[in-house]
Image 1 (tube, rainbow, N blue to C red):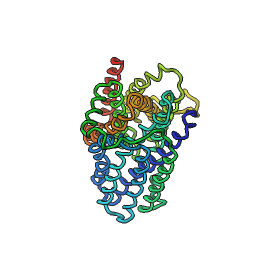
Image 2 (image 1 turned 180 degrees about the vertical axis):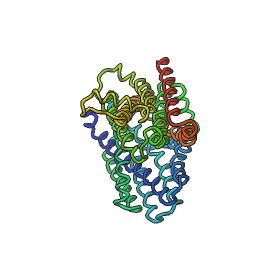
Image 3 (image 1 turned 90 degrees about the vertical axis):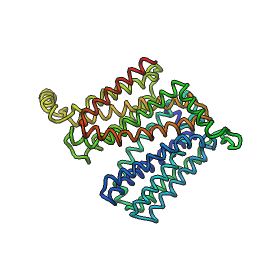
Image 4 (image 1 turned 120 degrees about the vertical axis):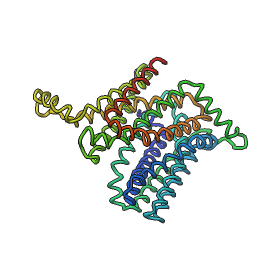
Length: 413
């Protein structure tokens, strides 16, 4: 991993990713908080989620087509600076819900161009043999920034206030753009629009590559599945806290989100340092089955179901080793984070190995559209199923689905 960080351009790209991801995740959290604060309405919060989600569905693949025509370093610089400028609109129109929606929507459109320019740049500055380590570091940056953003959102909002917080976030985007300027990519030239194929030809070419290359289609599916699982638990997490753990919703992030994020970071570090090639090749399967086991066990972590068991165990164990249900939940969350990293890191590496510079942006744009589309599933479907059948049954159902998916990938390897 130190070898990858020793590559100056990659280190600059990684720092740019960290600052931009922290800024974007904090912006998302804060926009949701403010929408609820302005209106005391869950519907208003859903409006923010939809405003952030729809551009991915509508413009993800299209943005990838254009990013492949342009210089990706330039795109990263401009998208960071544009998002910084967009946030300033909130200073001009404070406490305006429509402006809040507009800022969310426009920022999300700009982000659709940022995504297919960022990760696809890795193979242009990192040797092929170091791609897994590079993607592990990127995974650490993404998940670590989510954890940092979540932890900083509340205190930063209190410290800076409802308007000046966006100045702080704008500064983070500018810092990200500053680090982008240190990236050096040899012979990186955008495709002249006048010489490029038509828009529809490029879209068809990208879709043809996806359908004809099994490793690419499988990796796209797995990365979409990874995001879907995270979004699903974001939706049913409050219900899990209340129905299963019998704790307040406010306690849930510290007990589950934080250890899951740390597990993702740990899993990424572990993969980057593993030497055994056979383990790397099968890590996706390990991640799927580990996720299935973790999700299956989560519903059985209720206080009522385990009270007697823990009493018996604690009678045997020394006092300093006494355990309770919350220790088990934290451990399962940590394992689920590791499992997610086992899927995310190698799947990204395969996408980069199997695609050329001319197609990589389009493939990541297509991935972004897929994630945007499926993100509506937990918002619309999973929450309703949890209300009707209960969180426990939904978790067990997802667990069984993952076993089926894992068996399919095992059979097709």
